[in-house]
Length: 155
Image: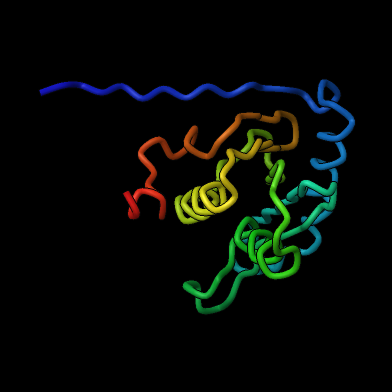
């Protein structure tokens, strides 16, 4: 038997320490909170994705009285990228929750990001933003270390 230890590394920033481009993406994500439809949980989540051409695509969680039909902010943004910006590549993702400490994407969204990283042949940069702190990392494998992708199915 072997013991495997998995560690993650995040860089923590304050908003004022970020680059101008990262500040713009965080603010776009924060402003997208107003697009959230979350009357049941009252937990707003938003996502802003910067594409390789500089375009910023927004998403926000969309709840439904039938909970399984709810859509995550990340999923709405990824669907918009795939359907409206076909052929463009994702550069950076900002996810915002209006609480002090950043929250990470759910497992469903982590696996969705893994699929998009595989499709686009690159790891994305991520900014997880709360009200005070921002966590930065590259590649969704940071949060989903034992992920699999469609590329694994073809090997």
